[in-house]
Image (cartoon, rainbow, N blue to C red):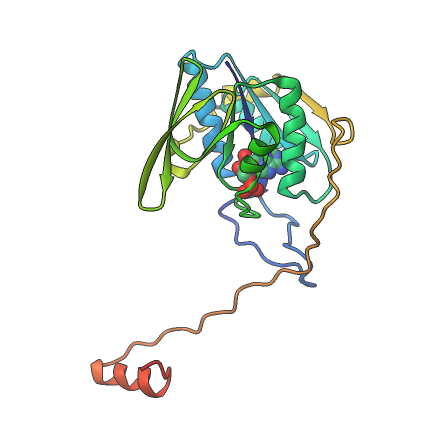
Length: 249
Ligand code: AMP
């Protein structure tokens, strides 16, 4: 069984992002970039399937700039067998990414496609669903458990107020939620080994995909700063402040 894992290069989750001085976009100068945390969970799940002898090959795919090779090398160090970069410097929307991934799926024919439920930069939560529609294959989003047997995937999904278990026929797309697993750290020998694993580079034009944006970013801004709180001496003072200053009662 071949597993394809989609990984995105994003601003590291520890970084507090800031807008550029002209507010035109997020300032990415000298900012630490990493593999999207949900994609890391997807890679871990694929590698676990390989370790159980269920997956025979794990292919990591990213769509983005040449620097996305760093995140693909991380996926290779975590245990993926080979990687494909669809290289472009264009500002990418989920539909364009899904079309590029579809073109890769058409040539790779994976049985299972693992993705993150969401990229922490754009917070779109769209790419997996769009890819499923383009491929016409089944999907299970927000997965917190996955098992694969007899050409079927059984997925426990995190839904509002509980868990839902679904069975999908393969090929299928599964998007990972936070509790699917805890990703391993890449060991130094595996980081060294990853440098020699195959990483093929293609681009949207060669895949026949037009990635022209349909949405224009008009600006970004920080949320309004919250005022510092105060300590009140007693309930009477609290009530007075709520009534006369905040005017909420
Ligand atoms: P999003 O729909 O942007 O929230 O992203 C959901 C998931 O789609 C991510 O966790 C990735 O698995 C995949 N994805 C999004 N953008 C890319 C990209 N540029 N390259 C590869 N995979 C991506």
